[in-house]
Amino acid sequence: MDTYYNRHFMGSGGKSEMAAELLGLALTHPAKSVMTKREAGPILEMLRDTLPADQLEAALERGKQLDLEQMVAQILEEQS
Image 1: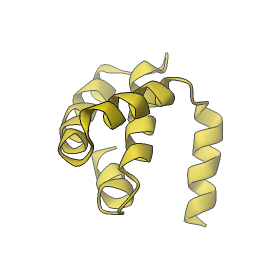
Image 2: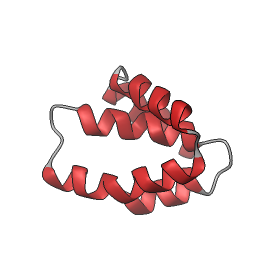
Image 3: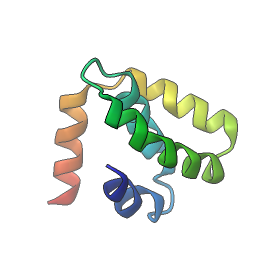
Image 4: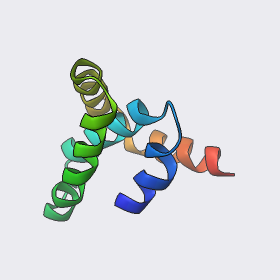
């Protein structure tokens, strides 16, 4: 997860909010694991350095409402 986030979001200006939304989805999804939480920590720190606190919190909240299957389809479409 860390490599994917770094490559596709953190270095791609303007995508930090989307990264935060995906992180919000990952951290609240019923299938999350201990590894998900552990890998999310450094990404969350990078996002805290990138986004103002209110924008980060809003994006994390929006992420809680996302549908995993729709997000995967969107990401795959963007990569093709």
